[in-house]
Structure formats: C-alpha cells, structure tokens
Length: 97
Image 1 (cartoon, rainbow, N blue to C red):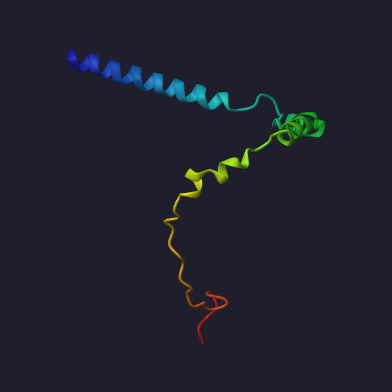
Image 2: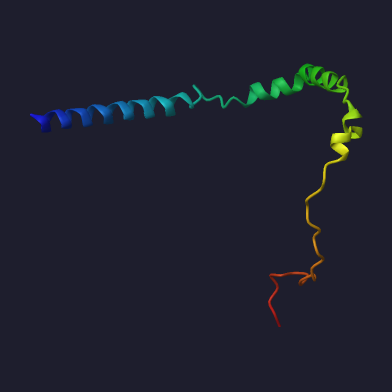
C-alpha cells in the first residue's frame, strides 16, 4: 500500500511540475505572428517621454559642498601604484620566427 501511495505522489508531483513548466514557457510566446517590435519602435518615435526625461535630468542640481567637507578631505587613498611593465609583442598571435 505504501508503494502505491509513493508512486501516486511521484506521478502527481511530476504532472504538476510539467504543467507549471509548460504554462511558464507558453506565457513568453507572443500570440499571432507579431514579434512586438512595432510597439517599441512607435514608442521611440514619439520622443515626448524622452524629452520629458531630459528636462527632468537638466533640472537636477548637485551639491558639491560635499567635496570640501573635512570628512571627505580627510579620506586616505589606500590604492597601490601600478608599476610600469615591459610591453610585449605588437601581435601576440603572430607566429614566432
């Protein structure tokens, strides 16, 4: 009896996973022959939203007093200097003669 229940549960779980995968994959397929490229093209031709966004970006003012703050000026650069290395061949893939 336990084996029959175990087989039934395995079949049920497999069917649910299969149905979920099938419905997930079918959701991404566009209906009809339209690939959806026309909508993006018409949205970019409009340009109204682009001009609106550009206007909003131009109205932004940055507070540069942060860079003269004592806390910012006291920061230390822990980076290491990169030592110059000898330059290799002009074409590393060329055959060596």
